[in-house]
Image (cartoon, rainbow, N blue to C red; front, side, top):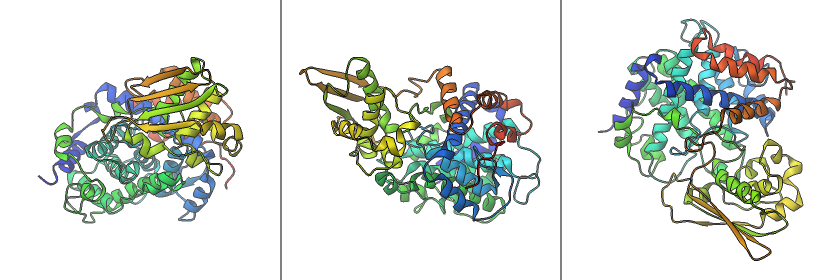
Length: 466
């Protein structure tokens, strides 16, 4: 029946209290919020960030919502836009592999902006500060909505799904923070539908429009919640209607199957960390290259490196390394990231500077990387992958990747997670004390009376206004 998935998600969003969240869901929400905030701080050093910030600030001045890694405050929709851009512009934000979407990014940016709104500001919840438990609940529910929409799709990507599902998750998260009832939450879905956007053309060309689309999704989530809270009527059948989300944006879907599972396992526990600042679809090959490197494969003895991978990998990152490519393109290029891994033994933020992208030796090495499609048919399959190196002495080396590093099946250790946070914050701040303060604040979030304290360690020193 049309509307089943929307009704199930709306009911979950209204009826769930923080006490209903199982401990693993709370821990996962804290863990991935920490990761998202840290990546967002590093993103203020990313390409086209300052131009994006200048443009966004021209939409309106004032406001109490802070920009990550900066001392600038802005209106809620503006802060959500810029922060979501920063969270994704380095391709370092967490992902739900089954949904093929970065489902935390727009949700966290919108929820943090809502939490930062001036108390009593018109359009806010006017109930005093948002406490840590309320924020955690809103994040978990927003991720649940975005992931459910992504998982319900059973056909290959047509649109940029992190943005198209992100706007719904962001709108619901803001609605939860405002304690919306059932009718208002349903209006959040309806008004989100009117603002859905996200083209894969930006992904194909490797343009900064890709993170901008996540910024737009976060901003649209706040706008949708504002309209819903004001009582403005919205379409009732935003997901499964004849002109609803699935009919317009996904070729095939199983909304009924997903609707039956709503309220079961929390999707936030299924998120994957990104250990490398590049498209998730490059990570299997990077892992494979590092494995082969440890077994003696080097740039000077490699003849060819061939990846056998599912169709999704080919759609997302199998593209040639080009002499004129920029960082946005290179982060989504299997050949470049694989060459960097083989040459340097790691892939980090520093490998996407202009100087690194123009290294003749690395580009020549990338030319020895090739790919073919394996016999995996699932439209959301990242694995299995097999990487094979052919060496100058006539021998070969192979490695099979059955789970990506950072996924629930191969999770990062606590030490690795904290090292990533430290590395991200060091892109902007020199002192390690901020890392410890941020980690401790996120850990204490369930007991915080005011969630705005989360941003104190990562926004209290202004960078130069662009």
